[in-house]
Image (cartoon, rainbow, N blue to C red):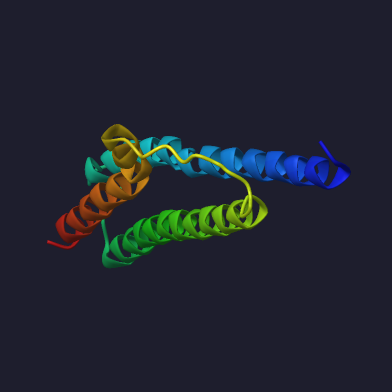
Length: 135
């Protein structure tokens, strides 16, 4: 390998490592989702004798639940943008090289959109809980 090829190879390794890091962060949202789901169960089963649900408390709980959804949505959107940028950088480095791309399998496509699916389910759950809190 020439010196220029060595530099390209090292850059490609760095981008690949960044790619894996971003993917790992993206899937860390699942553990957060599980924690939030447990919290939602606690909120949904409040005992009014322990903590009366006044309108102020209902409003605060609704705001906090909405913030959770916004934070997860923002995290997913940002990691999608980061993945796209990394993919563009990788393509620019290997532009002239003969690199075979494997076709994405169905299971990989499903896993690729899994965090978005979980956040949609969580969003619907939060909306339902907010509705139940106010009804």
